[in-house]
Image 1 (tube, rainbow, N blue to C red):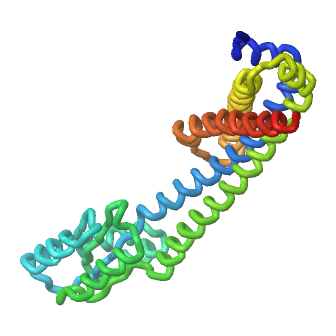
Image 2 (image 1 turned 180 degrees about the horizontal axis):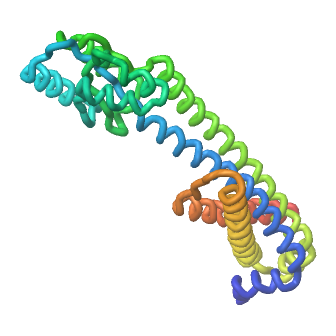
Length: 284
């Protein structure tokens, strides 16, 4: 009985150019997916960084007593999604504002501190949603010693809208790029099968079982997908380094994504090979 691994290796030796072109096509297809993943990952990180700044600021009335202040903080800390409530005194608010050049130029002439004390409410990662922020803001407004509440509602709505739209767009484009990669890989494998149609026909004539015929092709498809995946990772890494060193900072994709892309290339290679060989075996 022929060894499928030996047969697959023999196929590579007999048609190195064809196998190389197939791996190149797979690599370029996965490279497009890699570039999209790189962009999507960095966009997600940027949005996450912005979301970390989401907070509700509750401005306090003059003359609030320590007991009332502690009660307000305790009330806010018990709300779902709240991570921290930090008290900012009038003096600290003035000092922070003075770090802005325009305010620093006039702050020295002020006889009265115009900045109120406030409570800065920060959220847990799972609490950074429009619904949670609005609920916390409503509770803060109901506290008697809170004079005003600000949380940049319009800006926050745009941020979360961008996050939702970005997620939907990433899903659609990811599926589209994966579909294109599948078609390219399937075409490359079908070319390889067509180039060896006489070999398949002879094996069929001498009574070889179908499993013995298509198993080497499955291994070849897996190897082609693997080589294409390696090439895609190298091309994506080169692009990442070029952008990082010459344009702007760019984070590399997570290792899990990288190995997932490699596994996807192998899986697509096997599935495309299986489909192409089985279809050809039905014709002969």
